[in-house]
Amino acid sequence: MKQSTSLRDLIRRTNDLWAGNWGPSFAVVIIVGFLICGLGLLVPVFSKALLFEGLDLMRLGVLIVSFLPLVLFAGPLATGTSSYFLSVAENDHPKVGSIFQGFERFKTSNAVFLLTAFWCFLWCLLLAIIVFGGLFGLSMLTKTVTISSFMTSDALSSIGGAFGLLLLVVVLFAIVGCVGLFWVFFRHSLVLFAFVENPEAGAASAAKHGLSLIRGHYGILFRAWGLLILLFFLLAAIIFGLNYLFMSIGFPRLAVIFESIIGIYFGLFVCAYPMIFLAVLYEDVRDK
Image (cartoon, rainbow, N blue to C red; front, side):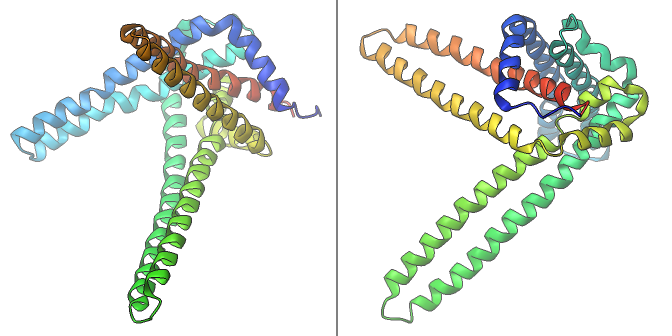
């Protein structure tokens, strides 16, 4: 059994692959993004029409049908995207056209995608119940403490302490919620790669295999995404700093052009680079 690869080695391999495949990877993100957005536009178009014309059973059916293209095509497109980035990780002559390979197994691709989405929904629902339930219970407790504080001589300090505690706990719950959402994403991040590599296994088997592969590797993913978030804030600070510089010396148009170029590049980067990293991680852990 091979030893686990360090985060530094995974990032180094991802950087090497990124250097030779960033152009096609951007093309994949743009194509898939336009297709998903185009299908998603059907929903607000029908929703707007129903809003002004009124809602009856027939129009409600039309609204539900407007979701179907997005639901039916999201699975194959996600599978094809995973297939492309897995080819990048394996240096297996990745082709942009591989994003449509998921349509070759239309039913199974949708089954894997919808099964994973359903699990994510259940975990997010449980997380929301815990976080918002805790916040609601705490708000009721704080309200009770605040009302009772008016009956004491030290009312102002008691109220201030109660709200300070409430703010602290809200921040803690927000952190727990964010960490929980990342955990849900990480838990299911290798499922589609497992399906792409073994499509004959079926949806349930591929999902089970993908979930088993990620066990023991959450630490690497949390550290990697932490570095990505730090990079985001660093780049944002640089952009705002240079924007202020250009504006102060009288070049507002140059500032807008610079922001647009950097913003588009980084927007595509945060979509493509993590996918290559996940594919590299999958390649590393699948034989262990």
